[in-house]
Length: 386
Image (tube, rainbow, N blue to C red):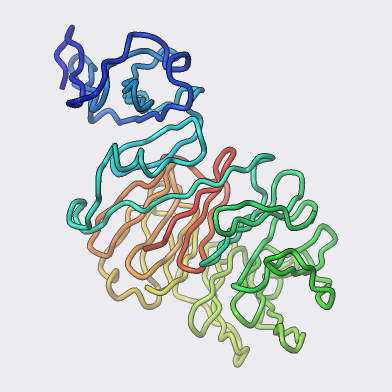
């Protein structure tokens, strides 16, 4: 820690930055933010891990002039000149550009072998700008990200390039598999297109308003209708629509190996066999506020602020994940459970290692293809589930 009245130490070999505003000196710089734990409680001074302290918009910052790497501050607020927020190990990183250069990551934290971070290293985040935001709907697969912007453009992100595929209007439900993108149009019709944007003229299915939409390799699923509604699925090869049973006021779908799960608006959880054989049954659950399915099992987030598995999840069986006072989303991988609540996106391992991934409360949060994606102001963030 710096002592009162003394300048913070610079990293060896770093050039000393003059005391001036970073916005003027270092356009395009990278900004680093650290929390209150980096501050002395008595005097609230802090030590710059790199560079020398300067000032930017009233915030204490650290800058290395020769590399343009900046900002370390206890405020947890990005200066306007560094609007893009990333999470890098224990640091919050703000940058002037949407992408955080790999060279900058290496310069700041160095190589990150698994044992350097307790066997649970932070994921590499991809930040995809949404020029006309916020995103209205998002879907993610192993190879692609899709989102609908505020003007109704359906865009894809494949291989680092963002491309507009179609104009779809005020779409709020989007789903995808490794071949097709699905959405429900303004007029309540189920539509589809390829990754290249070629529309499937054979699919134009009228449906009642849907609360959620999901897809796997062979079928599309949705929660349809009012006054409780129905859970339905479409077999793509035959065009056959199948009724899986009463949704009971379903609001959120989850696809697992075998059953189809959905959460109801009164906090219950129901499931039906994807084959449609037999009526749906109710899980012994109440107070559920989020549902997540994945390789590790089916999980719920509860109104008490904890999450746990209701099917599978043996490795997590004796762990109540503290997901905050207002958990809103869950995503489940092989070895991690992700959630969003109380202004954070976080994840946990089965042995209880909790890591805050991003200090933001997403507007949307989805998973698919071993990845998770969430929306924030001006961007969609993507990360591997495990």
